Structures are given as C-alpha cells and as structure tokens.
Length: 320
Image (cartoon, rainbow, N blue to C red):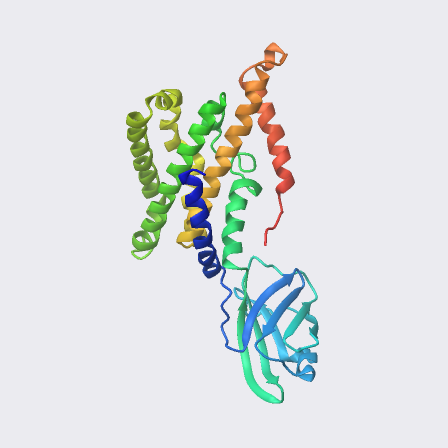
C-alpha cells in the first residue's frame, strides 16, 4: 500500500463528520428532531416525543408555504401519524417544488396531554444534497458544452488528442475554480456592498485574465511540452464563455462560498468530460472511412451534436 492510498484511507473518516455538519440536520426547535421532504407530495416531521393523535388528525393545525411566497398557502390533503406518535407525514395535493425552501407551521402542538405551543420550522433539502446537486448539475445534467453550447472554440481546438484534452480539462478546471472564487469574493465583499454591480462583467473578465496569465506562466515553467501542445488555446481560455458564465451565475443566484466552489468545480469537470469524450471519438474517426467532405471539423460538429442529443436525456433530472 503506497503513501497516497494510506492518506486517502485516513482522510475519508475525517471527511464524514464534515459532511454531516454540512448536511443541515439540526432542527430549529428542541421538540422537532428532523423535518424533510419525504417525496414530491409528503413532508415528514420527526418529533422528540409522541404527539396526540387527535391533534395530528386536524389539518387546520398545519399550514405550509414556500418561503419566497408567504401569501400563497399550499393546499394540504392529509396527515398520517405513526403508531408510536413520533413521526408525522403531511400530504399535499400538488407536487412540491423541493428546490425552494418551505415554511411549515404546527399550531398548538400537544404531546401526551401537555401543550407544547406553536412551532414554525423550515423545510429544505439537506445542504450536502444541495451541494451535490449543484456539482452534478453543472457536470452532467446541465453540461455547459453539450446543453448550453458554451466554450466551443476551445472545445473543438483541443479535443483532437486525449492527452491534450485531459491536460486542457485539468488546467481549465483549476483556472475556473480560482477565477470563480476570486469573482465571488470580489462580488460579495466589494461590488455588492458598494453598489457596483454594473461593473461585474468588467471585473470578472479582469480576474479571469489574471488567473489565465498565472496558469500560463506556471505551465510554461513546469511543463513546457504541455504548454506547447496547448498553443494559442490556453490564451483562448480568457475568451471561453464558460469561465465568464460561471461567475455571472454565482452573482445572479447569490450562492455562498461552498455552493460557488461546487458550481465552478462541476463546470470544470463537465468541460473535462466533454473534451475527453470528444477526443476519444475523434481519435477513432481518424481510422474510419469518413467521406472527404466531412473530414476534420464538419464530422466533429456532427459528433458534438450526437453527444448533445445524448446529454439531453439528463434534462429535468433531479438529485436529492
């Protein structure tokens, strides 16, 4: 067993409590252990002690609405209490939008004949689930290349060989994560507090250029062979639409630091996946009997279109 494997074995147990802390399982009220979306039409409430069945049978004791729209109450269909009285499943009439946080009000809770009072709790996805959804969404479900058609200039230019594609994908991931985190910091602590939001595009382009120039200088010294293989396309990273789109998405959606990191990482890994898949096919196409008219870039566009059709199968997919 080498040292790298040993380090991974040691780090995995240390990461588990961190993930649990990020999962957001802590309740807002001492009598409520957990509140979560059970499925599209059910909300599950786990109490610290048994509640009275007569109280749980009255739908008038419950009210639910999406946090952004407090004036629109969600119609409830029924409430089902477990045999031990500690788990309550509230059923709604229509599918819930689980991407939005909800507010659940439990009026005049009664436990073993003792009044607890009114409890108001938030219902939302686990934080780790949100982060994983952002990562997989940017990487596969909403791949910036195959679903949004961004970054095509660098995509077609560096997808002729798998070695170059992997190197470019890793470099691009490093650049986009660094540029996105600097852009998030600049937006949250400078542009937004001083009402300079209108300068975000100019500032983000400058930060992207700074990141690319730093990677260009480091790569020139560390790996000259890979630097020559990239050629002009490393400089084209500055003009890559993806590397500018991600900071703009972070600003529009008001993501926090962790969400911003996972979105940037997902976008970079998604670009790496797209490059590797395309390079693998283009290497095989060199040995195929392609009509002269379609050789080179035309057949590459056809293959990219087929990949885009395949990735459309992920559209609408929901994780957690």
